[in-house]
Length: 405
Image (cartoon, rainbow, N blue to C red):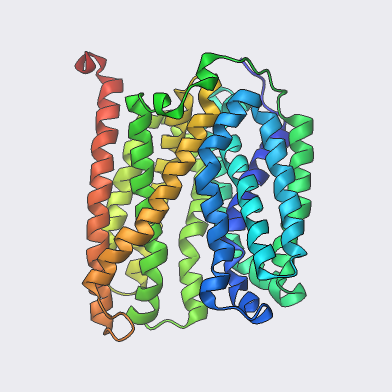
């Protein structure tokens, strides 16, 4: 049995996940300042965010495969150093075009960091501890997302927009130093499994199920960020400051519940906890489809996000635990890709459902906006039900293996 990993290795993986998530959310608060400084339109400065997300989505699977072939520690170190260089280039940008190009490089580094952190869990801890580390990484992802607007606003007010990007430079250097000092040295074997196409990896039905559930659940979570602001502002009449506090409830709950969710996964098993998490999410989505008023909305959001933490820790553990060591990078990349695609689907498809149910949101009455919220999460409930069906089949296969013969 592996001894308990040095804390430095877990800090390195946690910082890598935190920085990748922080890079997604911290730039948003600076868009108005960037539009003013560079005399650019909203659509132009929006590419500061989009370039980062598109770079991650485009290369995250390739980054995972590269880790399998060249060594995950080596590739993670390269990603961290690339992220650090990109932070410096962003902070020194003399033009918007320069900044967008540097954000592409930052996204490439972030993709490598996200893929390698999940992949290296199996190289770092015993199977009995996998769930809690997956929960820890889920917590760091949620903390990074939640910290972005608040930390970004503070940096922006004190030192200007360049500080939004330069802040990641020292942290990424620290993460790289810890990774170099504490993560296990690569032992790369040029196996056929490391060279094979990720399409052949997708032949595994268990992996396909885990990826599909991840995408659908991520779409539901994204709906809270797309539809929630309209309900809070137009439906409930909250001022922007109060709306921001209400929007922070979900990420804060995810941050607090990530590690306990991982411990429950280690204790009760990932198939059972996957289904439990989806059941809690279904209760949250049902509550949102009926919510009326701020207290009911926040209570439903807490339930939904708690369920998401349970699901994410359990599903990530199930997917990564069943993978051959030579394929962990590729599968980690696919798992992150499924999440990103789910976020895109949630923003577009569930956003379209809300727009259909509440066509003119700028002029709509409060009740019409509430109806849009209810219809959107009614559809979201159907997505969770579909994921629950898959999870139930997985649990049945584990508890009653004779049924699968």
